[in-house]
Image (cartoon, rainbow, N blue to C red; front, side, top):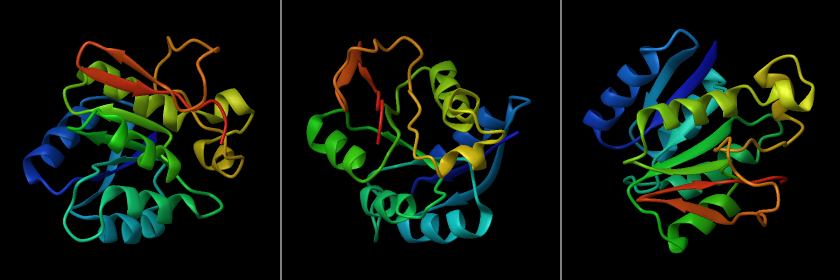
Length: 169
């Protein structure tokens, strides 16, 4: 079971993400945060495998929260989920340690796939569970179709959504 923490300041968005994730047999939402500070606290307390992190939240934003969360030795994979798909938002999130970047109009199946890839990276790096691969700092692809020749942190635009691939940290 992939354990997910959802961090978004909009209750309706959080509720929709919870319903989407819990419609599957392999993803469990273990917590919800309304701002970056709460995401940091819940991440430490609940030890999720993946965090779906909004960028723009009151108080501590998603970039600052991602940076603090990913500083931990065994940090969860942070997938940024936001309405912004421009480089001004993308690069700071990746520099802060986000493993992937998806816009909020991403197809629900693609979002679930990204969560699964973030939570199942241990199968690719040799760990036995998501927690065992996190300390290796091996980033997971947000897209299964990303070419291996794509430069680090480069975005691939498909219609109105962006998926980011980070090959190494």
